[in-house]
Image (cartoon, rainbow, N blue to C red; front, side):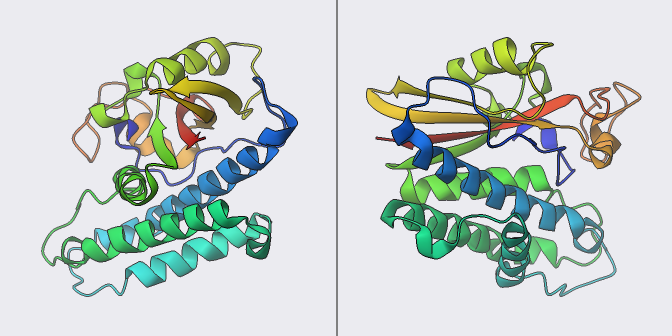
Length: 247
């Protein structure tokens, strides 16, 4: 994940119905799939963000923040986004969505010992780490069909696993950082990736006020996770959700 974001929600893209890149009519289903995967990842990240005070409460033992509880709360947030009804999913959509839900639940359950540790304050189970772990588990389950990553401009990356690949970096530099690029507008394109025709989608994310605790001013000051702050401002590009669907 890019530079350890401890905020759960960026100022998310507000124009998810408008796209750039070469998108044929038969790619509309891929766009919808990408939107759903990104929306649920954001929902889960939001839940982990909202419970940081509990997670980092050194006086509490069992916090009842189980994988099932986080999943239920994430699904509730996801449903408020008015996604397509699950009964309209095709077979692949259902397979990918079920894998993502399972990945979220498993990651939280596997970190119960850490979450419930008494006598320790900051535990490092922040939204950024959570999202990276969920995406990695998702790839373990359905990596032959799809993969997800949260990346960012290279100068904002803390974890090398989140470094943008060549395609992601080009989109960030030539599209998202361009002064005339509409804020929140994703970029989608069909490209060849590792010898396979692939649908790729990159969704920009921007710092919200809560992100600035770790990524704002003063630049260079060490944040709670031990990294220097980037000196960002509310509304600055902070990262991007990358989704690949293999054909």
